[in-house]
Length: 306
Image (tube, rainbow, N blue to C red; front, side, top):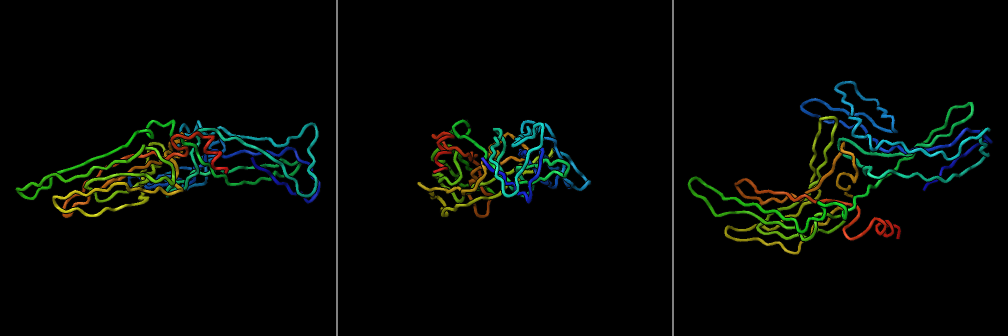
């Protein structure tokens, strides 16, 4: 629900006042791929309008990736009949409501591209140029963990080990066992309990993949890190009843949408650091949603309003 304010210095006749939402707006996606600069234009407003970009190595996005998202949403707030509409002088307020389609990705700002939305309003004037205005819109997609099979994997775990060798000698095995004490699905701000044995370090990684036609680039970013104590030869390190607190502003996995141009994924990156040797590492994927396990969308919305 929103409202439009029209301020007129004097009474004016108009043909109509309407709005539409730019459902999917991918701005200036550009990255280096194989030594070449890959650029993708702006896609918006259902007509696949392109932004002004350098001509060199321009690769347009594949429209088929957006066909389910670019259904234009229009709202005619007031429209002329046989005669024009009269806008009184002064400040005039008009209420409006626009519904968003399901499956659109969340607003996102990344190193190589953004997903952004805005509402555009138009006043069609009789015999004069139209008046246009835009307003940015933040979209929070819905990823219900209760409907995601991967999010309901119970107590995901990972283990790794190896033998250290030095010339003709070989030591006993060195390794680790890491377990999440819960499901694979969480929401931003959650505390994730875990246990680890013979560990050294764990971190949560954000993986963002940007795509333009057949080209893609993956960027990995460390979100947070926890480090345990060192273990001596022949010893075992235990880490029980520990928690990793997720940041509150994490975008949901896959941006909670059907679009595949920008994809976001998360995993635990567990590393056992070995002095003077190659480290052991393994990963556990996790799902970041917006509706936690055991709650419904309506309950989350109601809780957010209180």
